[in-house]
Image 1: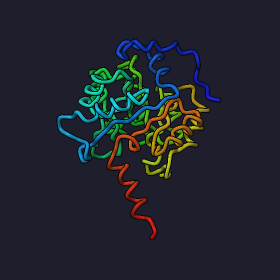
Image 2: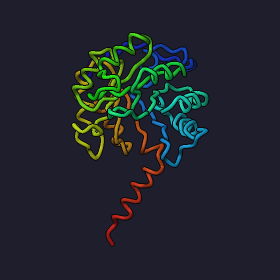
Image 3: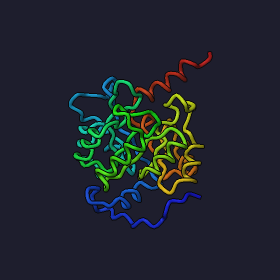
Length: 253
């Protein structure tokens, strides 16, 4: 059984996320579906002016989703204007000399805090950041600067999850499992990582990564995940159509 404390105060649904406590935000997302609404510059749904991801977020909210994951200050700001759900915010940016790309520096953290995002996700894998700092060091620095900000680490393996927790992180997500050169790229979700971390950590574990079906989302929760994040299977039509095309093209006569 997971070790997370069960005594969070009940969430008052009429309140906005802007004046909710950490416990209320975590309780709102508990046991639910968080929809990732992202479009990178090379993807069909990306536009310079934005406006599409808020529509995705609105559809997710109407379906009953408990939260949104979004990239860039622009999209986060536009999404928060149309839905009253907790938003997990990131800024994806590549830096020379490091494989890190999810909220890598304090500058991105500052921008996310300034736009009022509810939860900030940072990459918690073992590579060093451009300034030479490790993920645990970066987490500690953020917590020192913004002690009240809810912070989530996107990790790829068990040890990274343990280190993030020891560094003061509020949540961990299995986002990066299979996307580092030292973790296996599974066809589907890393259920075993979710199960192990959920049993060991006293903080919420978010199941994320290659969740393609409703059944896989449910299994993530059954494995102990506090909530499950689904992106590509819901909000990336190119990826969705690609899976259909792979099946159709692989059909034998």
